[in-house]
Structure formats: structure tokens, C-alpha cells
Image (cartoon, rainbow, N blue to C red):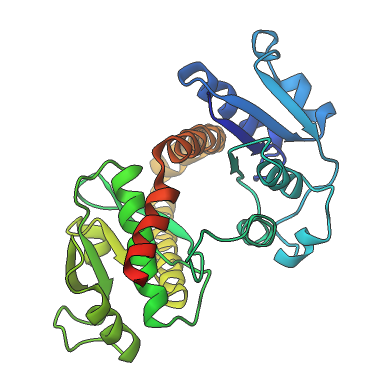
Length: 306
């Protein structure tokens, strides 16, 4: 049976337009059941006539804004993200995709769907670009700021099966983020985690921050405090480089003229990137549903708990 994907149509910087467009592009490439959740009066005009019979809409009037507290979503049961998660809870959908408030999405998912069996804490995962033109799986990037060694051990298992089942890496290499590669490096939690992970297939020991970006490791594990710092620092570096480029542009009249002409192009490109991101997020959700990754994580945790 085709995967049923609930899509929060109201999340994102540009409203439903790039989300619906991303959904349409995904339907052109993959077979799945698309369920758009949001304001039908805004969604319907964006759906081409040839796709109206391939998309169902679940009405949700409320929208969780980026400025809202994550916990607000639990009280606002008519919001698009709450209703999208409820579709999975009620077995009317297999997965949820949202470009909206990540904290609200995780809060609702955790409390309405719960955790996998034997998972002590869920982790937020991101795919970081590396110089090998691949992606490094980094987790946790913000869900758990205070972790014990058993939590980091579980993050390693989650990351391993994500890399294996979703990214199709046969034996993912796993690194524990520390302040040096030697076994003696790190704090007490990472040292204990190192001992827990010794003997796990693919575990290569401690890695440093640069290893996230040089492609030497497929999965990098850390607590949410460190992971979020890495993520935000990376964003800051990218922003600084962009700022420096703009400074150089301002010093050249020819470059200024080109920049003015390109401003509209960049704005359009941002929208294009948004719908491409939605399309790829849907593909990831379909792959996740089809892969059995949750079952593999549960089985591995059960074996390690014996």
C-alpha cells in the first residue's frame, strides 16, 4: 500500500504556496497518498486540476507561528500541525511532514504519538553537508540539553539505522563528538558513552568538530546542547561569509549593479528552494515509512538492554 503522508500545509515562511508546489512535484515522481492539512480556501486554488483527485485536504484553521511557544501547540487542537500529527495517531496517516515550528512539531509528536519502545529520549537529527558531497548525520541537535551516557548510546543506535536504512550506507561509521580523538578526551559522560559504544559495529571512537564537515564519519553523536551549538555556529559562519561577500560587492560599482539585478532572482530562488525542500522532505518520509527503520531501532535497543 502506498505511504500516506500528512503534510502541514500552513507551516513555512511563504505560506501554503511552496508547500503545495513541493507536494505536486513529489507526486510527479513518487506514488503516495498526500494529505494536506490547513485552510482549504487557501490550499485548493493552488492545486492544478489534474492533481485534485490525488490530494485530500483536512481542514485546520489555526496556524502555529514561529514566535509562538512550542507548548502552545498542545492546547491549540485546531492548528495544522496538531491535526497532522493526530492523523498518524489515529492511523489515518503513516508520517508527518512540516516546514513550520520545529519545537511545536516535536512537542505534539512526542506527547500525542509517544516514543518507540525502549527509547529513553527522542533526538533531533540533521544532515550536515560535507566536502565529499554527501551528508553527515548529526544528533542530537537540540532536543536534550542534559544527557546521560545511555541516552548518547541510544542516539548512536538511532543514527546508525537512519544512515543504514534511509541513506543506504551499508556499515555506517559512528563517531562520538569530543574535544580530541584520544579515548581519554571528553567529559565524564562522553568517556562513559565511549565504553558503552566499544564493540558496536561501525564505531570509530571519538571525533572532533571538523569531522562533521570533512566526510570522515557518517554519524556523529553528541548531546543536544553541543549539537545545537554546532548547528547555530555553522549557520553563523555561513551568514558571516555572506556578509563579507556583500561588503566586497558594495566596494565595486559594477558588482552593486549586478547585485541589484540579482535581488529579485535570489528571492525567487528562495521560494524554489522551499518547495524543493518540501519535495525532498516528503521523499524522506516515504523512505522512512518503507524502510522499517523504527523496527530496527527497537530490535537493536531490545538486544542491548539484555
